[in-house]
Image 1 (cartoon, rainbow, N blue to C red):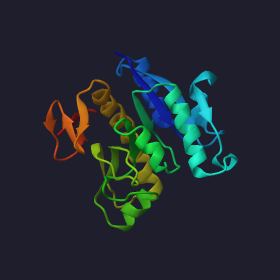
Image 2: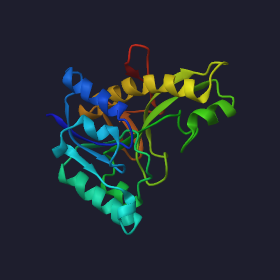
Image 3: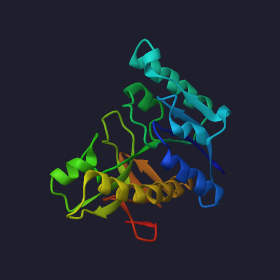
Image 4: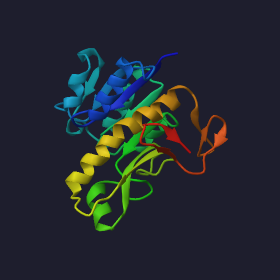
Length: 217
């Protein structure tokens, strides 16, 4: 069965583009049924037909809860199997997160639990990390604290700036997200009791992306 994916994005939508290319090439059996944004000018919206777009500025709502309720209703209307936060920069409220509990994932530019939140590349350099990267995790009300499904590591080079490190991490984000979605949409990876399982086996550490773009324990 083709999985229905809703994507939340605030910017240019490079991860969304990677998802759509994987679908078009037959590498991911899924359909992007909607793209949702808190920024009506986000480039990501232009990647799908107008009938599959929803965008609104939070400033136009009386409260954070009101915006989240409208966003949640719009997402629910497309009946997604998975909700993917791919460069969505607004913190999601607890009620919205719980509405899609267990089927909302986020791709975050660090090797969680290190460097939750913003400015992860600069913080990795400041901390003297030898390794940096990206993580795909389930979304829970606490910021970037959900169970981590998979990660891709990038060695930190002595010449790195936050910008050069960010660019190299982004190159790994795309295959990481696709490989994770392949497992999720096939039902091979799932959460049970706040623990990630692969093919029925409990994972004690996140899956890791290898140089060929494959995930393994």
